[in-house]
Amino acid sequence: MKEPIQLAKELGFHGAAVVDTSEIVFQEEFRTYCAENVCGQYGVNYTCPPDCGTPEEMRARMLGYSKALVLQSKWEVPDLTDMSQIKPAKAAHNQWTRKLIDQLEEPGLMAGASCCTLCSPCLLPTGEPCRFPDRRFSCLSAYCIHVRALAQRCGLEYDCKDGNLYLFSLFAFQPKV
Image 1 (cartoon, rainbow, N blue to C red):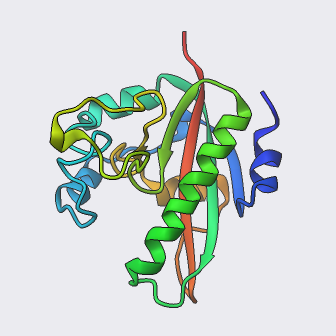
Image 2: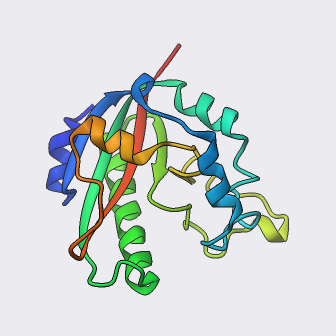
């Protein structure tokens, strides 16, 4: 595998770190944010609750890998409540993450800054199968990952303030046998 942290920085990520997946903090309570459906994807996207799996199933998927590459991007967003600025930043962050994963050429599992948007809209409401089952990804919230704790563990800035938006994703790799 190529050197992941160096590659992440070359691709434009603001920060990157590798951790053992055993160091990831999971909090099932975060799933309630998904159920509030602020993003509008609950029940209409294969990668979102309830269709992505239970918190226990998601945790088991993540812990099926030994290592995780944590990725951080930084965006200048004057109004941190303006979703018209945040959504494109999340899409770009996830595209960078996918590009990095493709370059690493390593089997693994992606968790994004938001839900999968490989198909827009997702085919779930039509009953058709996912077109990209091997490339789709769920968001960190669907995995119930405590992103603040993960950022602190990695020494990465988390708090969005002064017009700076920090987004996170990760790539779990090294499957456990």
